[in-house]
Length: 212
Image 1 (cartoon, rainbow, N blue to C red):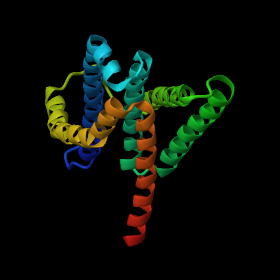
Image 2 (cartoon, rainbow, N blue to C red):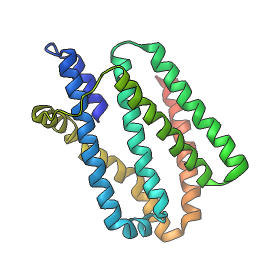
Image 3 (cartoon, rainbow, N blue to C red):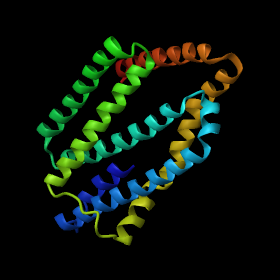
Image 4 (tube, one colour):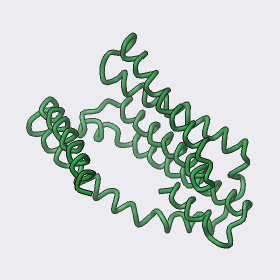
């Protein structure tokens, strides 16, 4: 939850541009460390994880890359959001979605007409905009990764650390049923089940908006 920590820091009364710059740099340092740890776990236990979820090695790696890209994008967007720069926020979001859609149409239509094509477009689009996010943050001089600030690192970990158990709990509630169905009934039935869950989610959102 790095972007939330950055947003909270911005509104503190003693925050200065230099402090915020170091804080964003500390967030990138934590992101680098956690990404390295996750990659080590991936390379050590990829066989077990792949067999458990019936996913290939490439898909697992793409998932890690896509998640990392999304976090970097959220850091860029959060800095625009808290500063009230709605125009840049909107343009960046629209371009990101547009590239994602464009790559999906091209790759699925002409190269990979299957789920891999859609996944590839998500990963490629996310990676492109993650790079653009870093370029934009660098151009605006909004982070510094060359100085290690232990106080900032501890503060970010304390802010986001307690949320890890909450996130893991949500993942267990969300995906344990699919894991069980996949092992007992097969991947095809799991796909049908997920489709039903997605459709029920859309209806739930509709009913909740009407009742609210």
